[in-house]
Image (cartoon, rainbow over all chains, first blue to last red):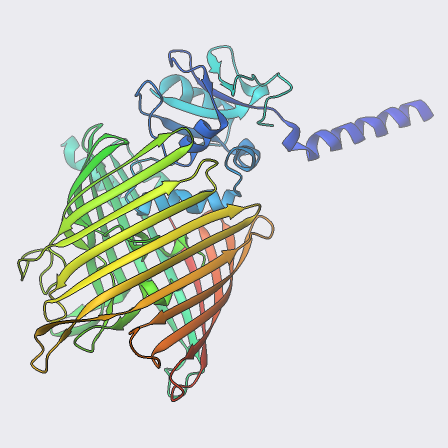
Length: 153
Length: 350
Protein backbone atom coordinates (compact mmCIF):
# COMPACT_ATOMS: atom_id res chain seq x y z
CA UNK A 1 0.00 0.00 0.00
CA UNK A 2 2.78 2.31 1.02
CA UNK A 3 4.73 1.47 -2.12
CA UNK A 4 1.78 2.07 -4.43
CA UNK A 5 1.05 5.38 -2.65
CA UNK A 6 4.68 6.41 -3.09
CA UNK A 7 4.50 5.45 -6.77
CA UNK A 8 1.32 7.41 -7.23
CA UNK A 9 2.86 10.46 -5.56
CA UNK A 10 5.98 10.14 -7.67
CA UNK A 11 3.80 9.89 -10.75
CA UNK A 12 1.85 12.97 -9.76
CA UNK A 13 5.08 14.85 -9.01
CA UNK A 14 6.54 13.82 -12.37
CA UNK A 15 3.36 14.87 -14.10
CA UNK A 16 3.41 18.22 -12.35
CA UNK A 17 7.03 18.80 -13.30
CA UNK A 18 6.38 17.94 -16.92
CA UNK A 19 3.14 19.91 -17.04
CA UNK A 20 4.52 22.98 -15.35
CA UNK A 21 7.81 23.14 -17.23
CA UNK A 22 6.95 23.84 -20.85
CA UNK A 23 10.21 25.80 -21.16
CA UNK A 24 12.07 22.51 -20.98
CA UNK A 25 10.39 21.23 -24.13
CA UNK A 26 12.63 21.18 -27.18
CA UNK A 27 11.46 23.39 -29.99
CA UNK A 28 12.41 22.44 -33.52
CA UNK A 29 12.49 24.80 -36.47
CA UNK A 30 11.20 23.02 -39.54
CA UNK A 31 10.90 23.56 -43.28
CA UNK A 32 9.85 21.41 -46.19
CA UNK A 33 12.41 18.86 -47.39
CA UNK A 34 12.47 20.61 -50.75
CA UNK A 35 13.83 23.78 -49.11
CA UNK A 36 17.62 23.94 -49.60
CA UNK A 37 18.26 25.62 -46.24
CA UNK A 38 19.74 23.33 -43.57
CA UNK A 39 21.03 25.70 -40.91
CA UNK A 40 20.15 29.14 -39.58
CA UNK A 41 21.85 31.21 -36.93
CA UNK A 42 19.84 32.64 -34.04
CA UNK A 43 20.32 36.05 -35.67
CA UNK A 44 18.85 34.71 -38.94
CA UNK A 45 15.82 33.43 -37.06
CA UNK A 46 15.45 36.75 -35.24
CA UNK A 47 15.60 38.66 -38.53
CA UNK A 48 12.99 36.39 -40.10
CA UNK A 49 10.57 36.39 -37.16
CA UNK A 50 10.87 40.16 -36.74
CA UNK A 51 10.18 40.70 -40.45
CA UNK A 52 13.57 42.28 -41.11
CA UNK A 53 14.24 39.73 -43.84
CA UNK A 54 11.63 38.30 -46.14
CA UNK A 55 13.69 35.78 -48.11
CA UNK A 56 15.95 32.82 -47.46
CA UNK A 57 19.56 33.03 -48.63
CA UNK A 58 18.42 31.27 -51.81
CA UNK A 59 16.14 34.22 -52.58
CA UNK A 60 12.96 32.26 -51.93
CA UNK A 61 10.23 34.23 -50.21
CA UNK A 62 9.76 33.22 -46.57
CA UNK A 63 6.30 32.37 -45.26
CA UNK A 64 6.38 32.34 -41.48
CA UNK A 65 4.39 29.99 -39.31
CA UNK A 66 4.07 29.79 -35.55
CA UNK A 67 2.89 26.91 -33.43
CA UNK A 68 0.94 28.62 -30.71
CA UNK A 69 1.75 26.28 -27.79
CA UNK A 70 5.49 26.93 -28.30
CA UNK A 71 5.11 30.63 -28.98
CA UNK A 72 6.06 32.08 -25.62
CA UNK A 73 9.25 30.01 -25.23
CA UNK A 74 10.34 30.54 -28.82
CA UNK A 75 9.95 34.30 -28.76
CA UNK A 76 11.52 34.62 -25.34
CA UNK A 77 14.63 32.76 -26.49
CA UNK A 78 14.95 33.86 -30.11
CA UNK A 79 13.59 37.42 -30.00
CA UNK A 80 13.98 38.12 -26.26
CA UNK A 81 10.51 39.66 -26.39
CA UNK A 82 7.22 38.96 -24.68
CA UNK A 83 4.28 37.75 -26.75
CA UNK A 84 2.63 41.12 -26.31
CA UNK A 85 5.70 42.94 -27.61
CA UNK A 86 5.89 40.59 -30.60
CA UNK A 87 2.24 41.27 -31.41
CA UNK A 88 2.82 44.99 -31.19
CA UNK A 89 5.93 44.70 -33.37
CA UNK A 90 4.08 42.89 -36.16
CA UNK A 91 1.16 45.27 -36.04
CA UNK A 92 3.72 48.04 -36.42
CA UNK A 93 5.24 46.37 -39.48
CA UNK A 94 1.88 45.97 -41.17
CA UNK A 95 0.69 49.48 -40.34
CA UNK A 96 3.98 51.05 -41.44
CA UNK A 97 3.66 49.48 -44.88
CA UNK A 98 6.27 46.80 -44.23
CA UNK A 99 6.47 44.07 -46.84
CA UNK A 100 6.85 41.19 -44.41
CA UNK A 101 3.73 39.21 -43.58
CA UNK A 102 3.04 38.20 -39.97
CA UNK A 103 3.39 34.53 -39.05
CA UNK A 104 0.41 32.32 -39.67
CA UNK A 105 -0.78 30.92 -36.37
CA UNK A 106 -1.41 27.22 -35.86
CA UNK A 107 -3.04 25.91 -32.72
CA UNK A 108 -2.32 22.27 -33.42
CA UNK A 109 0.70 20.46 -34.77
CA UNK A 110 -1.23 18.81 -37.56
CA UNK A 111 -2.19 22.15 -39.11
CA UNK A 112 1.41 23.36 -38.79
CA UNK A 113 2.55 20.16 -40.45
CA UNK A 114 0.17 20.69 -43.40
CA UNK A 115 1.37 24.30 -43.71
CA UNK A 116 5.05 23.34 -43.86
CA UNK A 117 4.52 20.62 -46.45
CA UNK A 118 2.11 22.51 -48.68
CA UNK A 119 3.43 26.09 -48.63
CA UNK A 120 6.39 27.16 -50.71
CA UNK A 121 8.96 28.93 -48.53
CA UNK A 122 7.27 27.87 -45.29
CA UNK A 123 9.16 27.83 -42.01
CA UNK A 124 7.64 27.03 -38.64
CA UNK A 125 8.61 26.15 -35.10
CA UNK A 126 7.12 23.13 -33.36
CA UNK A 127 7.55 20.96 -30.31
CA UNK A 128 10.22 18.45 -31.24
CA UNK A 129 7.85 15.63 -30.29
CA UNK A 130 5.43 16.77 -32.99
CA UNK A 131 7.96 16.70 -35.82
CA UNK A 132 7.41 14.02 -38.44
CA UNK A 133 9.85 12.37 -40.83
CA UNK A 134 8.56 14.24 -43.85
CA UNK A 135 9.78 17.61 -42.47
CA UNK A 136 13.31 18.92 -42.42
CA UNK A 137 14.53 19.98 -38.98
CA UNK A 138 16.99 22.85 -39.22
CA UNK A 139 20.12 23.10 -37.16
CA UNK A 140 20.51 26.40 -35.32
CA UNK A 141 24.08 27.64 -35.28
CA UNK A 142 25.17 24.14 -36.28
CA UNK A 143 23.35 22.38 -33.43
CA UNK A 144 20.37 20.09 -33.75
CA UNK A 145 17.52 19.89 -31.21
CA UNK A 146 19.08 16.83 -29.55
CA UNK A 147 22.47 18.51 -29.08
CA UNK A 148 23.40 19.88 -25.67
CA UNK A 149 24.30 23.26 -27.16
CA UNK A 150 20.94 23.67 -28.91
CA UNK A 151 19.61 27.00 -27.77
CA UNK A 152 15.85 26.88 -28.36
CA UNK A 153 14.22 25.08 -25.49
CA UNK B 1 -18.15 36.30 -61.64
CA UNK B 2 -15.26 35.08 -59.55
CA UNK B 3 -13.65 38.51 -59.63
CA UNK B 4 -16.24 40.13 -57.37
CA UNK B 5 -16.85 37.21 -55.09
CA UNK B 6 -13.64 37.45 -53.09
CA UNK B 7 -13.76 41.17 -52.38
CA UNK B 8 -17.49 40.89 -51.73
CA UNK B 9 -16.97 38.19 -49.14
CA UNK B 10 -14.19 40.22 -47.58
CA UNK B 11 -16.40 43.25 -47.24
CA UNK B 12 -19.29 41.23 -45.85
CA UNK B 13 -17.43 39.20 -43.28
CA UNK B 14 -14.24 41.14 -42.69
CA UNK B 15 -15.74 43.19 -39.89
CA UNK B 16 -16.86 40.32 -37.73
CA UNK B 17 -14.39 37.61 -38.61
CA UNK B 18 -11.14 39.15 -39.82
CA UNK B 19 -9.31 35.86 -40.02
CA UNK B 20 -11.82 34.58 -42.55
CA UNK B 21 -11.21 37.66 -44.67
CA UNK B 22 -7.60 36.77 -45.42
CA UNK B 23 -7.06 35.37 -48.86
CA UNK B 24 -3.85 34.88 -50.77
CA UNK B 25 -4.49 38.09 -52.69
CA UNK B 26 -6.28 40.40 -50.29
CA UNK B 27 -5.49 41.01 -46.68
CA UNK B 28 -7.45 43.30 -44.40
CA UNK B 29 -6.12 44.76 -41.18
CA UNK B 30 -7.27 47.63 -39.06
CA UNK B 31 -7.38 49.31 -35.73
CA UNK B 32 -9.85 50.99 -33.46
CA UNK B 33 -9.51 53.08 -30.36
CA UNK B 34 -11.70 54.87 -27.87
CA UNK B 35 -10.27 57.38 -25.44
CA UNK B 36 -11.02 59.31 -22.31
CA UNK B 37 -9.49 62.74 -21.69
CA UNK B 38 -9.58 64.93 -18.60
CA UNK B 39 -7.62 68.01 -17.62
CA UNK B 40 -7.36 70.36 -14.68
CA UNK B 41 -6.20 73.23 -16.89
CA UNK B 42 -7.91 76.46 -15.90
CA UNK B 43 -10.64 77.09 -18.47
CA UNK B 44 -9.92 73.72 -20.09
CA UNK B 45 -12.58 71.53 -21.69
CA UNK B 46 -14.73 69.17 -19.58
CA UNK B 47 -13.66 65.56 -19.36
CA UNK B 48 -14.81 63.62 -22.35
CA UNK B 49 -14.92 60.36 -24.21
CA UNK B 50 -13.64 60.18 -27.77
CA UNK B 51 -13.95 57.50 -30.39
CA UNK B 52 -10.75 58.48 -32.12
CA UNK B 53 -9.82 56.05 -34.87
CA UNK B 54 -11.44 53.36 -36.91
CA UNK B 55 -8.98 52.59 -39.69
CA UNK B 56 -9.11 49.82 -42.24
CA UNK B 57 -6.00 48.78 -44.12
CA UNK B 58 -6.37 46.73 -47.25
CA UNK B 59 -3.45 45.12 -49.04
CA UNK B 60 -4.09 43.81 -52.54
CA UNK B 61 -1.34 41.49 -53.71
CA UNK B 62 -1.13 41.74 -57.48
CA UNK B 63 1.85 39.42 -57.87
CA UNK B 64 4.98 38.41 -56.01
CA UNK B 65 6.48 41.84 -56.67
CA UNK B 66 3.51 44.21 -56.80
CA UNK B 67 0.83 45.21 -54.33
CA UNK B 68 -1.52 48.08 -53.57
CA UNK B 69 -1.61 49.31 -49.98
CA UNK B 70 -4.54 51.45 -48.89
CA UNK B 71 -5.85 52.80 -45.62
CA UNK B 72 -9.11 54.56 -44.92
CA UNK B 73 -9.65 56.37 -41.66
CA UNK B 74 -12.88 57.27 -39.94
CA UNK B 75 -11.75 59.71 -37.27
CA UNK B 76 -13.87 60.92 -34.38
CA UNK B 77 -17.00 59.02 -35.43
CA UNK B 78 -17.77 60.93 -38.60
CA UNK B 79 -21.25 62.22 -39.08
CA UNK B 80 -20.94 63.99 -42.37
CA UNK B 81 -23.73 66.26 -43.49
CA UNK B 82 -24.01 68.78 -46.29
CA UNK B 83 -22.38 71.96 -45.08
CA UNK B 84 -21.35 70.59 -41.72
CA UNK B 85 -21.15 67.52 -39.54
CA UNK B 86 -18.30 66.25 -37.42
CA UNK B 87 -15.35 63.94 -37.68
CA UNK B 88 -13.36 63.07 -40.77
CA UNK B 89 -13.15 60.38 -43.39
CA UNK B 90 -9.70 60.33 -44.92
CA UNK B 91 -7.91 58.19 -47.45
CA UNK B 92 -4.76 58.11 -45.36
CA UNK B 93 -2.68 56.19 -47.87
CA UNK B 94 -3.05 54.53 -51.23
CA UNK B 95 0.02 53.49 -53.13
CA UNK B 96 1.20 50.99 -55.68
CA UNK B 97 4.25 49.26 -54.28
CA UNK B 98 6.96 47.37 -56.10
CA UNK B 99 9.35 45.08 -54.29
CA UNK B 100 12.34 43.84 -56.23
CA UNK B 101 13.85 42.38 -53.06
CA UNK B 102 14.45 43.52 -49.49
CA UNK B 103 17.14 45.93 -50.68
CA UNK B 104 15.06 47.74 -53.28
CA UNK B 105 11.43 48.71 -53.13
CA UNK B 106 9.51 51.61 -54.60
CA UNK B 107 6.05 53.08 -54.22
CA UNK B 108 3.99 55.71 -55.95
CA UNK B 109 0.85 57.33 -54.61
CA UNK B 110 -0.11 58.73 -51.25
CA UNK B 111 1.99 57.56 -48.31
CA UNK B 112 2.91 58.56 -44.78
CA UNK B 113 6.37 60.14 -44.90
CA UNK B 114 8.96 58.08 -43.02
CA UNK B 115 10.24 60.48 -40.40
CA UNK B 116 11.39 59.52 -36.94
CA UNK B 117 10.09 56.54 -35.06
CA UNK B 118 6.38 57.17 -35.39
CA UNK B 119 5.33 59.32 -38.32
CA UNK B 120 4.41 56.23 -40.35
CA UNK B 121 2.45 54.98 -37.35
CA UNK B 122 1.09 58.24 -35.99
CA UNK B 123 -2.53 57.05 -35.96
CA UNK B 124 -1.91 53.38 -35.24
CA UNK B 125 -2.36 53.53 -31.49
CA UNK B 126 -2.04 49.77 -30.87
CA UNK B 127 1.62 50.05 -31.89
CA UNK B 128 2.68 52.46 -29.14
CA UNK B 129 2.44 52.32 -25.38
CA UNK B 130 0.89 55.72 -24.74
CA UNK B 131 -2.43 57.19 -25.81
CA UNK B 132 -0.77 60.34 -27.14
CA UNK B 133 2.52 60.37 -29.02
CA UNK B 134 5.21 62.78 -27.77
CA UNK B 135 3.80 66.27 -28.21
CA UNK B 136 7.17 67.80 -29.05
CA UNK B 137 7.64 66.01 -32.34
CA UNK B 138 4.20 64.64 -33.19
CA UNK B 139 1.92 67.29 -31.69
CA UNK B 140 0.78 70.56 -33.19
CA UNK B 141 2.80 73.76 -32.87
CA UNK B 142 2.43 77.31 -34.06
CA UNK B 143 3.37 77.61 -37.72
CA UNK B 144 4.61 80.85 -39.38
CA UNK B 145 1.03 82.03 -39.88
CA UNK B 146 0.30 81.58 -36.18
CA UNK B 147 -1.87 78.51 -36.73
CA UNK B 148 -1.48 75.11 -35.07
CA UNK B 149 0.04 72.52 -37.36
CA UNK B 150 2.18 69.38 -37.15
CA UNK B 151 5.87 69.79 -37.88
CA UNK B 152 5.90 66.79 -40.21
CA UNK B 153 3.23 66.26 -42.84
CA UNK B 154 1.00 63.30 -42.07
CA UNK B 155 0.88 62.34 -45.74
CA UNK B 156 2.76 62.95 -48.94
CA UNK B 157 1.82 62.24 -52.53
CA UNK B 158 4.63 61.27 -54.84
CA UNK B 159 7.38 58.70 -55.13
CA UNK B 160 9.35 56.78 -52.57
CA UNK B 161 12.31 54.39 -52.82
CA UNK B 162 13.25 52.27 -49.83
CA UNK B 163 15.02 49.12 -48.79
CA UNK B 164 16.97 47.29 -46.18
CA UNK B 165 20.26 45.43 -46.18
CA UNK B 166 22.08 43.39 -43.57
CA UNK B 167 25.65 42.25 -43.28
CA UNK B 168 27.70 40.76 -40.44
CA UNK B 169 25.09 41.59 -37.86
CA UNK B 170 24.65 45.19 -38.99
CA UNK B 171 21.38 46.29 -40.51
CA UNK B 172 20.68 49.27 -42.68
CA UNK B 173 17.39 50.71 -43.83
CA UNK B 174 16.84 53.66 -46.15
CA UNK B 175 13.92 55.74 -47.40
CA UNK B 176 14.06 58.53 -49.97
CA UNK B 177 10.95 60.32 -51.17
CA UNK B 178 9.72 63.17 -53.30
CA UNK B 179 6.22 64.54 -52.84
CA UNK B 180 4.01 67.53 -53.46
CA UNK B 181 4.60 68.56 -49.88
CA UNK B 182 1.87 70.37 -47.98
CA UNK B 183 -0.78 72.53 -49.55
CA UNK B 184 -4.50 72.98 -50.06
CA UNK B 185 -4.77 70.00 -52.44
CA UNK B 186 -1.66 67.98 -51.68
CA UNK B 187 -2.86 64.79 -53.36
CA UNK B 188 -4.09 66.53 -56.50
CA UNK B 189 -2.11 69.63 -57.39
CA UNK B 190 1.07 71.08 -55.94
CA UNK B 191 0.58 74.78 -55.33
CA UNK B 192 4.28 75.70 -55.62
CA UNK B 193 7.35 74.57 -57.51
CA UNK B 194 9.28 73.32 -54.45
CA UNK B 195 8.65 69.66 -53.88
CA UNK B 196 8.62 67.98 -50.48
CA UNK B 197 11.90 66.10 -50.18
CA UNK B 198 12.63 63.62 -47.44
CA UNK B 199 15.00 60.86 -46.45
CA UNK B 200 15.48 58.52 -43.55
CA UNK B 201 18.42 56.26 -42.73
CA UNK B 202 18.37 53.64 -39.99
CA UNK B 203 21.29 51.58 -38.77
CA UNK B 204 20.82 48.56 -36.52
CA UNK B 205 23.86 47.62 -34.49
CA UNK B 206 25.04 44.01 -34.19
CA UNK B 207 23.06 42.13 -31.56
CA UNK B 208 19.80 43.68 -32.66
CA UNK B 209 19.25 45.63 -29.44
CA UNK B 210 20.15 49.11 -30.61
CA UNK B 211 18.98 51.11 -33.59
CA UNK B 212 19.94 54.62 -34.63
CA UNK B 213 18.06 56.69 -37.19
CA UNK B 214 18.33 60.04 -38.90
CA UNK B 215 15.51 61.79 -40.77
CA UNK B 216 15.25 64.84 -43.01
CA UNK B 217 12.28 66.63 -44.54
CA UNK B 218 12.00 69.94 -46.39
CA UNK B 219 9.27 71.63 -48.38
CA UNK B 220 7.65 74.95 -49.10
CA UNK B 221 4.58 74.61 -46.92
CA UNK B 222 1.49 75.47 -48.92
CA UNK B 223 -0.56 75.40 -45.72
CA UNK B 224 1.61 78.11 -44.17
CA UNK B 225 1.93 80.80 -46.81
CA UNK B 226 4.40 78.80 -48.91
CA UNK B 227 7.10 79.30 -46.29
CA UNK B 228 10.23 77.18 -46.53
CA UNK B 229 10.45 74.61 -43.77
CA UNK B 230 13.06 72.05 -42.92
CA UNK B 231 13.16 69.43 -40.20
CA UNK B 232 16.11 67.28 -39.14
CA UNK B 233 15.75 64.53 -36.56
CA UNK B 234 17.81 61.86 -34.85
CA UNK B 235 16.38 58.87 -33.04
CA UNK B 236 17.60 55.92 -31.07
CA UNK B 237 15.98 52.82 -29.64
CA UNK B 238 17.81 50.48 -27.32
CA UNK B 239 16.89 47.38 -25.41
CA UNK B 240 18.92 46.45 -22.38
CA UNK B 241 17.82 43.53 -20.25
CA UNK B 242 14.08 44.17 -19.93
CA UNK B 243 14.35 47.92 -20.36
CA UNK B 244 13.42 49.63 -23.62
CA UNK B 245 14.57 53.15 -24.40
CA UNK B 246 13.22 55.40 -27.14
CA UNK B 247 14.56 58.88 -27.75
CA UNK B 248 14.29 61.46 -30.49
CA UNK B 249 15.82 64.89 -30.94
CA UNK B 250 14.95 67.27 -33.75
CA UNK B 251 15.29 70.81 -34.94
CA UNK B 252 12.77 72.50 -37.27
CA UNK B 253 13.69 75.62 -39.23
CA UNK B 254 10.68 77.67 -40.26
CA UNK B 255 10.66 80.70 -42.55
CA UNK B 256 8.94 83.76 -41.11
CA UNK B 257 6.32 85.83 -42.92
CA UNK B 258 6.04 89.58 -43.36
CA UNK B 259 2.93 91.51 -42.27
CA UNK B 260 1.25 90.61 -45.56
CA UNK B 261 1.74 86.92 -44.79
CA UNK B 262 4.43 86.40 -47.44
CA UNK B 263 7.70 84.52 -46.79
CA UNK B 264 10.36 87.05 -45.80
CA UNK B 265 13.56 84.98 -46.07
CA UNK B 266 14.38 84.96 -42.34
CA UNK B 267 14.05 81.85 -40.26
CA UNK B 268 13.01 80.75 -36.79
CA UNK B 269 14.74 77.69 -35.38
CA UNK B 270 13.05 75.44 -32.88
CA UNK B 271 14.28 72.34 -31.10
CA UNK B 272 12.82 69.48 -29.17
CA UNK B 273 13.49 66.06 -27.81
CA UNK B 274 11.95 63.31 -25.77
CA UNK B 275 13.21 60.27 -23.89
CA UNK B 276 10.94 57.38 -22.97
CA UNK B 277 11.81 54.39 -20.83
CA UNK B 278 9.63 51.33 -20.39
CA UNK B 279 9.93 47.92 -18.84
CA UNK B 280 7.42 45.06 -18.98
CA UNK B 281 6.22 43.77 -15.62
CA UNK B 282 4.94 40.30 -16.29
CA UNK B 283 3.42 39.28 -19.60
CA UNK B 284 0.74 42.00 -19.74
CA UNK B 285 1.78 45.20 -18.00
CA UNK B 286 4.24 47.78 -19.29
CA UNK B 287 4.74 50.95 -17.26
CA UNK B 288 6.53 53.79 -18.98
CA UNK B 289 7.87 57.26 -18.25
CA UNK B 290 8.64 60.03 -20.73
CA UNK B 291 10.29 63.42 -20.60
CA UNK B 292 9.22 65.59 -23.53
CA UNK B 293 10.59 69.06 -24.31
CA UNK B 294 9.94 71.61 -27.05
CA UNK B 295 11.35 75.10 -27.53
CA UNK B 296 9.55 76.86 -30.37
CA UNK B 297 12.21 79.54 -30.86
CA UNK B 298 15.78 79.10 -29.73
CA UNK B 299 16.36 82.89 -29.92
CA UNK B 300 13.88 83.56 -27.12
CA UNK B 301 13.89 82.30 -23.56
CA UNK B 302 10.22 82.19 -22.57
CA UNK B 303 8.56 79.74 -24.92
CA UNK B 304 9.77 76.28 -23.96
CA UNK B 305 7.34 73.68 -22.68
CA UNK B 306 7.74 70.38 -20.89
CA UNK B 307 5.55 67.32 -20.61
CA UNK B 308 6.43 64.60 -18.12
CA UNK B 309 4.34 61.50 -18.70
CA UNK B 310 3.80 58.54 -16.42
CA UNK B 311 1.72 55.75 -17.86
CA UNK B 312 0.74 52.12 -17.90
CA UNK B 313 -0.06 49.90 -20.86
CA UNK B 314 -1.86 46.61 -20.35
CA UNK B 315 -2.28 43.86 -22.94
CA UNK B 316 -5.75 42.47 -22.28
CA UNK B 317 -5.49 40.01 -25.15
CA UNK B 318 -2.91 39.75 -27.94
CA UNK B 319 -4.93 42.36 -29.86
CA UNK B 320 -6.46 44.61 -27.20
CA UNK B 321 -4.59 47.10 -25.06
CA UNK B 322 -5.70 49.32 -22.21
CA UNK B 323 -3.74 52.50 -21.62
CA UNK B 324 -3.67 55.15 -18.96
CA UNK B 325 -1.29 58.07 -18.49
CA UNK B 326 -0.91 61.36 -16.68
CA UNK B 327 0.79 64.32 -18.36
CA UNK B 328 2.42 66.91 -16.13
CA UNK B 329 2.69 69.99 -18.34
CA UNK B 330 4.80 73.02 -17.46
CA UNK B 331 5.97 76.13 -19.28
CA UNK B 332 8.94 78.44 -19.33
CA UNK B 333 6.65 81.45 -19.57
CA UNK B 334 5.78 82.35 -15.94
CA UNK B 335 2.40 83.67 -17.09
CA UNK B 336 1.33 80.16 -18.06
CA UNK B 337 0.12 77.88 -15.28
CA UNK B 338 1.12 74.26 -14.94
CA UNK B 339 -1.60 71.69 -15.34
CA UNK B 340 -2.14 67.96 -15.65
CA UNK B 341 -3.96 65.88 -18.24
CA UNK B 342 -5.20 62.35 -17.95
CA UNK B 343 -5.58 60.22 -21.06
CA UNK B 344 -6.89 56.70 -21.15
CA UNK B 345 -7.67 54.47 -24.11
CA UNK B 346 -8.56 51.07 -25.33
CA UNK B 347 -6.78 50.24 -28.56
CA UNK B 348 -7.59 47.26 -30.73
CA UNK B 349 -5.75 45.81 -33.70
CA UNK B 350 -7.53 43.45 -36.05
